[in-house]
Length: 544
Image (cartoon, rainbow, N blue to C red):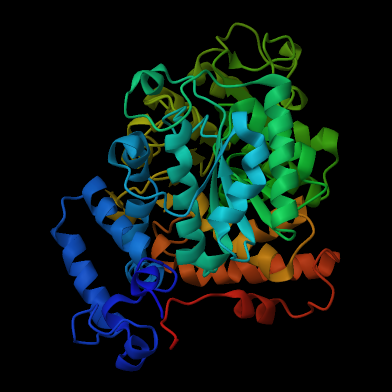
């Protein structure tokens, strides 16, 4: 005889009050539910009404997570129906306080696999247990060393893997049965967590160096053994580790690092959108990255590879870049350069003397950038004097202060519009309200990685692409064109989140087509659109 509570406690099977009378009889659920059978539409209306009663922010997310933990289909039905409103609740920015309070408010593991560095012999068992016989095709894995703009959060950071996968499903229709969030617990350097009696992770300093990289290798090997076709998405790893891990595997298996590549793709898409408005050429732009860490160098590399695809030589392409980090403008003799920064640094003899190259206004005066992208998490770094200096030389300055959360932005959209007399083409990392200036309503694009990585992932999964190379990433960035009318006054450089399901499908098809054209798709896959549509999951109930 069926145990009804096994079904009612399985979020992939549970339908709650939507189980039909026939299903209740067949599955041993008679008498375990109220008598009325509801449609998913009726359930969703009730859930949304209850959601609206909760205090804004973390309490609303907590309520939605209760639905996620009990009924995945209903959860995604509600999220898809209200996606522009709910995306900031289930993901950025509300996910930040949810991560900080994870151990404090823990109720359920949300289907995640928790792997600890001191028990690597349990990796395979752990992955098999959490997958519970499901065919896992996508893993989002984090060691939580560099979460958003809030730093090292150890095991609490598993929430970022859960949140990313929610966006994959809500935006692109990736099947939630085929995904797995993974936490790699290697300790934490956040002393506040170590001292917190409620903290649920390992209470020791982070493991680094050779033992750390051996653990990463063991994880990748084990994940590929248990799930042979899995696509690995690395999330919020530390500055040095992120690039090293990506570079080790990107030419061998399908891997993606959202911090290195995702931010770069969405910024490339934003620049392409801005140039669609200004009617200028990509190869004429001078790029300044303010904040040359993981995200900043990912952006620089994405722009660099786009210049190569446009036909520039490596030497010509590198002349289009200037990096600014905590030391100021980076020169070849600047102490502490990372391997990723070194190809893009400049010679001091290239620039005029007598200027302070730790001061952004002076740097802009010397360099004349047309594109300024901030990933510094330094609030207010884009000062009025610096932006006005940029506007002297750039006809339509492209300015993306994308640090998040909001309190860490380099400048507000409203100030940038005012300081450039409405000339700036802007994207911000967090949602920004439209700006009214001189009779024009300026729509502000959001340079949110969620615009890109779900469609990219769906395209990769749909074709079983062998690798995720620069051509696939460029196809993803270019696919966002056509969703904004550039002739409208105040048009945004990126499409609005409310259209995310529409442009994500377009994104996936473009990526799938690129994989087919390059010959890196699985054999027999010839039609990109059919492949994508065949792999999209929709939140609807099916009779058991």
